[in-house]
Structures are given as C-alpha cells and as structure tokens.
Image (tube, rainbow over all chains, first blue to last red; front, side, top):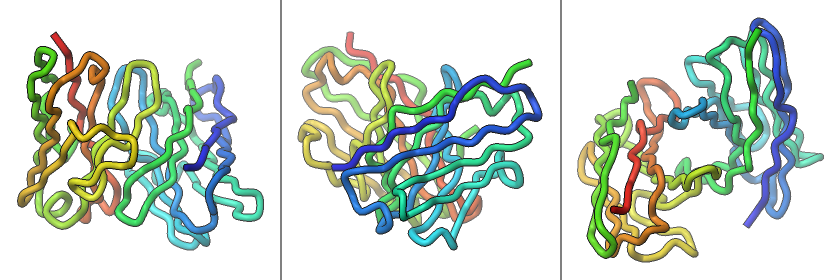
Length: 118
Length: 110
C-alpha cells in the first residue's frame, strides 16, 4: 500500500528558501519514480516535478524550473524539494506522491502547507 | 488555463448517472495514458481510475473511465452522497514535457 509523510512547510518571505521532505514507508522506495504536486488555496492541482528511481532523470513544471530542485535519498527512503527564490504564487499545499509506470500518482501524502508572504 | 479541459461543475440526484468529460490533444490524451483523481472536501487527492479505464482495488465499480482519441470521460453510476468531491483528469504532455492536470470538476449531489 505505502505511506508518505511530508514535512518542512511553513511561512517564508518572498525571495526566501524552504526545503520540503517526504518520508516513504510500506513499499520499495528505490523502485519507483516520485513526484511533487501542489495545490494553491481554493485552486486545482499542479504537477511540480518528477524524479526517476536513481535520481538521474528529472523533470520540472515550467513555473518552478530554475528555482526548485527535486532530489531523493534511497538509503533513507526520502524525497526532497528544495525551493529557492520563492514567490507569493508558490503558496500552496505540497503533496509527495509515488508515480507508477503509467504516470499514475498513488498514494498521496497528507500535504504540507507552504505560505509565501511578507 | 489547463491544456486538459473539464467542465467546472456537474450534479445529479442520488442514483443518477453523472459523466465528466476531459478534452485534450494529441500531445497528451492522444498519446498517453489518462488517470483520474478524486478529492473529497478537506482531504488529499486519491487515485480513482488509472490507465484510462482501470479501477484500483477498493474503488467502487460505479466509477468507470473511458477514452477515445483526444477525449476521455469519467462516469459515476448510481450517484451517492459520498461522491461529492472534486474530480481531476491528468496525463503526460509531450509539448510541455511534463504532467498536466485538468482544471477539475466539482460534483454536487442534489
């Protein structure tokens, strides 16, 4: 089944940085692509980034390219999202998700809220 | 504006059949698998349909997915009050080289 638990969210000023973490359990973490998906308050879902099993293949959404970095540590079953140059429009709940072969996302973590505000 | 177009809302009475459309293009739905997600109020999204028309274990068989060309549909047969939620379609897009979600459809049970 699998479980994902995000942490690291909080309040940050525009231009600041934040690092999100995701702890995975209940499945073989190193066998799956992993992703981050976000949802701004009252808005729809937006894919942020994907990373393959060994961390060598990475894709980013256009709105975060050059500012966010996705990474993983298979030894500790952890996924990360380093967010730099944060903007007000990056305010959202950030979800960690496991990605299947056909790009399905399951399971989802409970999410961690990032608020960018002065 | 999402590259996958969904109606903003849909509704029905208990027991009715509701259908949600998802319209895309060759670069996404036309070439790639489509998945559907359900987001109940105040909760994280959940995978509802994968690989165009497959249900994960535990998803009731009143939910069904289909795809033809560059469009897809999610049908809810025998609508129940607990089906009130937001529903999102999603697929990989070759032009964007990224994953795209539809704008979401809010289903209301009258």
